Image (tube, rainbow over all chains, first blue to last red; front, side, top):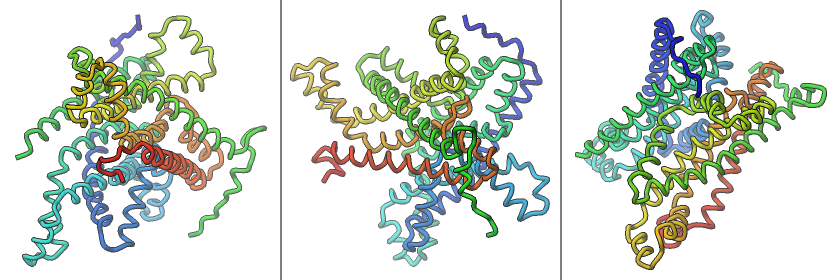
Length: 226
Length: 244
């Protein structure tokens, strides 16, 4: 009825898709690493006694959470290369698409991770921090070795769920034509006039990856309490 | 900084009839229209799915669960492409003929709004389900013991109470639907994000175009937040956490 036909796929198309998937994973893992570090830093700033820091963090998080990711990616694609060119004389030779996708995506996801970490820090009883201080541990150290590990652990299921969302969101680098998995699939579909089939393949692949990951997350958060 | 701001660019004529400011405002209007229509669809369908997921009927609740799992594990951009390219082929011939007789922007708007609505429905379903699950078991049983049929219990007791409990997460879903509508630009809907791109290309004023569009998104966010704060105040249930 739909006239679907998958016989157009070649091994060359398969290789393109695999290369695309590697780019997707690279973007997602960079965003995860930066998001966790910078997000935790933002969360600590937000909860800090210093007004200036907490205002900055609140502004940062609210701004990034109010703007669509597509907008952030396009903005970084058009703006960041100009700034980089001003800073490094060799920037002209870098892959600006990938660079700006990595930077934009990481800064965007940090805002979301910061909210998760803030909830995590707030979920740790204050007495933990006070007890650490009473033992003579300096406040920043108490944060690092007493509060943050517990916060991190409490929020592990949420962080993993956010990772799945993040992985799906990498498909949006389409707006700056970075050849990730989705953009490669769409490109092959356009070229061969088989866009419906390619979208079905893309959907199935994303579903398999994300569904497996979310099942694993559920299992982890069920067993992990102990 | 040596940047020369040039905000007057928005008053220049983009075509015989429209200025660049008109482009921006038309984009804003399209985003608002699309988000609102998709939200109505998502709210209705999501509530239905949420009811089905919590209903004591294995087949229906499995079906609703399957729907949610599929929709939540496939990126929205893939879904919108499927809605745009594949879904029209499933329609009866007469409907398809009507759809393709429309201007291309309308076809894209219709399919993308449906796609966005069906996508958000899965997320609304999860919120409704969480709301219903958070109610004490006694509520359902008391309603049934009072002689309500199950559909009546949902309609008069379970749904109204859980709606009032889930206003905050629904607010964030509402904020996301407007942000997610930007993805419709990829199938050719000329909403705010597409206009940002267009403004940047036509005027070569990147900073001004982007700041203007980001301001529009902040504006939408603020309005939604204010409206939902009002709704939250009006519908708060006395005696629960967070009520005065």
